Length: 104
Image (tube, rainbow, N blue to C red; front, side, top):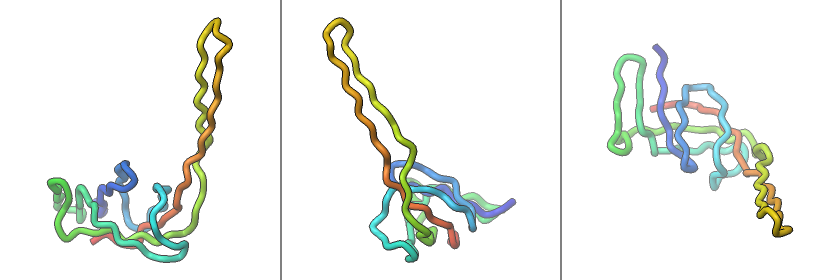
């Protein structure tokens, strides 16, 4: 089995392995830099699984920030029948593209 970690960032949880690319919520980091995240919920080295309460102590995931992108457009439409009221709102979330460098 391979090593993996369950990471919490941006209100979401991701199962990551070394070398994996993922899109996460915006972090306060520049493109091309590396970020260490310590909010690791679970950590496996391939043989043993450590589960944190809520986080695993001493565990960290190093991410390399590759760039920024935007998610798919989400459209919210409201309507009240027979009242002549309709409203459309669109939203695209700002995301960061990151590569998992290491899990420790």
